[in-house]
Length: 205
Image 1 (cartoon, rainbow, N blue to C red):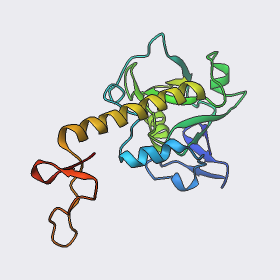
Image 2: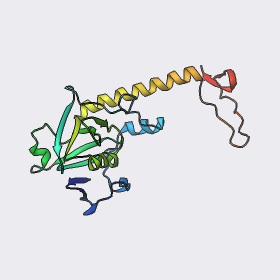
Image 3: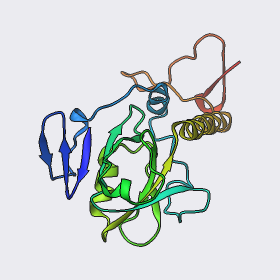
């Protein structure tokens, strides 16, 4: 658990200051379990970032956002699926005094790009990336885009469905993955109940 204070990140669990945000700090980050973390690992890529979310974008009227002067005065936590949530808001800090709607439990889904008014998605990227983005942001103010837990869950469910559809479409187009014998590096025989396809690929009934 980290408190964003000036240019340092305070680790309350070990009472240490971490000034190099490039170093991994996952070992001392508080994490919460989430079933979608397993789904994310199964796909072996961040299913929460589609092509649209991988690009910089402008903040819209549909976003709940806050423009906050550094230091932000927030405690952030990373959940098991890589989402970053607000664990605490310092009542005397800049976030609390900003006049924007910032709530404990909110999910940080986008943060300012290094320059300009656009933001990058932070869905599923983890605490390290979010902290680094805040640190290297040019200027004194940072824009953060927020979602409630319910709104974020809807987004995660939609991302999971889209990832499943992309996987199914790829298997329909290219066939199921070929399994090679680890010694001979030749395709292994299909399991019972599977039909052979052209070029050694297999599909299920």
